[in-house]
Length: 139
Image (cartoon, rainbow, N blue to C red):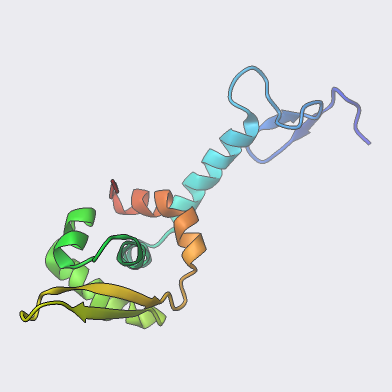
């Protein structure tokens, strides 16, 4: 059993066992540890998979997401967006439908029917890290 003033060592910081947050006048050590964990996660994320997760997220969250809207949101070329939708997402069981509006072939938008092997909540919770890996800033 520890005494009240005894220090406990963690992987990246020392925390005073007398305070639940480990504050020592500056940023709580738990926040420093969280930043370290985010950096570790970012370094492990695969950019190819991140592109697929981001496009799936944007298709679900943008109003009437079509190619120009996805290109504008990501800053990626048309062909990259098309390849992710046509080839990348189906490889993970993600189902995307094109909803035709108007008479021209390109008039319409994408609808996400199934996230497939991607976990929607995980993507939402780690969107900042995904965007960081891809060097994308969402508005």
